[in-house]
Structure formats: structure tokens, C-alpha cells
Length: 189
Image 1 (cartoon, helix red, strand yellow):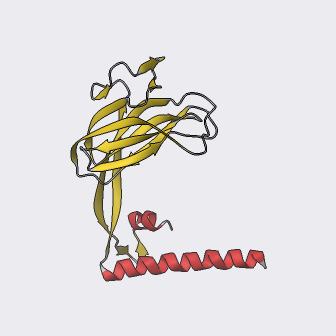
Image 2 (cartoon, one colour):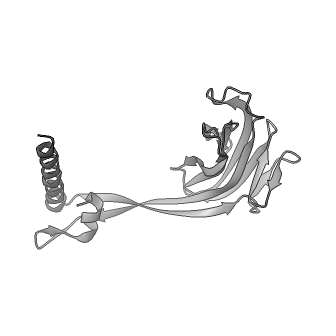
């Protein structure tokens, strides 16, 4: 019985995909696809500045701070920004401020595994294409799962990624009764 359900689901998905291709093909609709470019900004790039006296360079691969109120400022050009940071049991909640308050959000550097490994801790998209400034501030707030007692809170910055995201309009066409390769990849046939 279960095998039959799985086969029926596959058949339904295939029929739905074919219907979508036909609708796009005969209605002249267009589909938007996104192109994205990510440009790395190293933690020690000239566009990155750290509040004086509060940050330490660890093995030329990251900057870290144990001081609440310490800040890192990054100037970037594009439509978004990603923060690559260390996630750990003692990771604080930081505040992100983009373009003097146009965007203010929290970033949680906490991880129950406590590994301190690098990962994307924050990503913001949808900014107007152009020059931006982001300030990340180490707060005295922490994830409730932290519970204290492990170690003093610490924030670690490995780098950033400047995002260049654009929508490109693509038109789905039918050639000889089948969708072209680009249309097929958009609807995952």
C-alpha cells in the first residue's frame, strides 16, 4: 500500500511539472530567477574596523572579544551582507545596525554544541544596490539556552561576505513540444 502511495505521488508530481511547463509556454508568462555573487571580505580587510582596545587577533584567522559594547564596522557595496562568525556555547547575542538604523536586528552567536566553529551567523538581503555600513555590537544579552557557567561570553569574527543579488527575468518557451533546458532547470523536471 505504501509503495503505491509513493508511486502515485511521483506520478502526480510529474503531471504537475508538465502542466506548469504548458501554462508558462502558452501564456507567455515569465519567471524570475536570481543571480547571486558573494565576495569575501576578510576579518582584517581595510574596510573592517574594530573598536579600539577590545579585540584580539587569534592566529591570524579571526578577531575575538570578551568585552560587552565592543563593535566591528564593515563598509560594503552590494545588496546584502553575511557575517561569518564563531558559534559556541558562550556566544552572545549581538546587534546589527545597517545604514544608521535602516536595519536593526539581533544575531545569535550561540551553539549548544559549543564547537566555536565558523559559520554564517547572519545574512541580510534586499538592500538597495550600493554603498552600505554595518555595525555589529556585542551586547550583554545571550541565548536562554546558554544558562551561564560555561565561560565568559565571547564573540568571534572570521569575516564577511558582500552579497550582489539581482533578479533576472527569464521567459519560458516551448521548442517542438518540450520546454527548453533553462525552463526545465527552473522547475526541476
